[in-house]
Image (tube, rainbow, N blue to C red):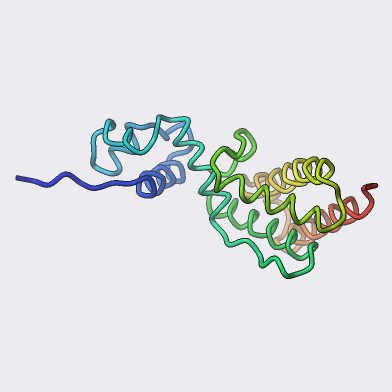
Length: 182
């Protein structure tokens, strides 16, 4: 008698990420993920409520695929390191990364990254409302740049030019943070 394969949320998200990386986001279905895991689709429902939960899990995976910088460094360095890590994530998962532009962070782990950035902006002197707004605008800007780069939009430029553009963008964002009135 064969034993049923044991799966968990992590295994399901790993499989979903592989499906998305190889075949695109449209290919991510409960059926495709189950097939990748060699289980029935119904086996996934013990760990995921459905495709929307699966997509929320992919957002979480993208946002937590790197360690957050230590809280004891300067705020600008922490924001720069987080932005650079997001850019690296986009390069590793170019077909999945655009999901961050269309879905909010829903899981506690995914929201933790947003909360980290907002807290860091608070340390830069922004009040709670201004930090929340700045996080939304900065995240959209960094994610947009990273998604554009990963999709090949800048392929006619050298890596050095793209790196300089990203550094310039981060410099502008730092200036905006320091210019926001309290």
